[in-house]
Image 1 (spheres, helix red, strand yellow):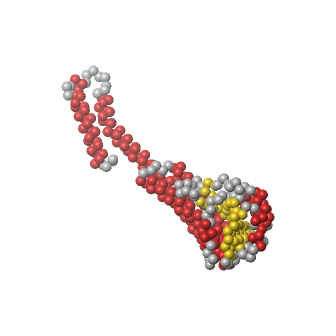
Image 2 (cartoon, helix red, strand yellow):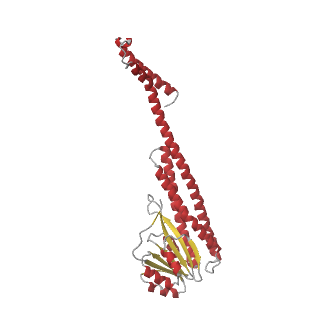
Image 3 (cartoon, rainbow, N blue to C red):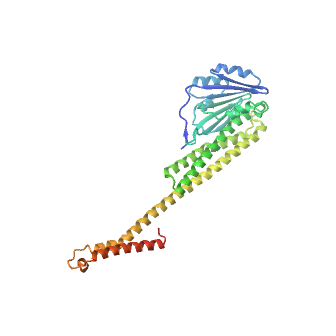
Length: 336
């Protein structure tokens, strides 16, 4: 089952990347006062934050960037649905990052808040687990689009990196479903029904995360805000199509899990039938033996065979002969 991250960093870790034509610098900062000089520069900058526990620092940052109080509440409230909100000076995006630190573990969901204005981008994560290293690498390229395009394009790259992680989690879920299917068919490992339902719940939770992201991107595409440039819309469309693809694949996997449940129940029924068939054959073999034993177990005084010298031997010959005859007959019928 996909789980939400509950633990948070004890403090906010901040880093700023300055970028533009011929400009790329990285700064580690510890106070909000260190952010103010970057507001005066002519090029763009990216402020990346980890942790939400220091409310006073978050409030100071919100005052510097004139972030609406309700937006600040949305940043701190990590149970928000993915959404796209427009303001006069900036645009606020809430999205959900899904990742797995280890392939053997269940996916983890975490809220990422993105705020971008004319010359700045702010990304706020709950925890220091980072998927934005490829973006930093692209920033180092002096001729790349990252430095030349606007802040809306940069925000798109952040969201694109998050959506790419959806594919990784989907692939992991598909692998688990295939492994369970193979184990059910081959019976090499006992897959239990609760494991299948747990995987179905994981798929449903991923879908509940991805579905609102489609609405977010749809709103972004339709935005007429000056901060959203027309040349960025094709890139947003591309991410939108990726999300649609993920939703379609999730629907396929949901159907696969339903088929897996049917396969599990059919396999279980088949096993039970095999057991019942074995028990029936054993019971059928013992019917004539029980009959003869019952007849000669009666307490009648005059039973001729009881006094016969070879009576005991004859009974055993009958026992063995009837048993072998029935086993041979069942084999011929391919009942086992």
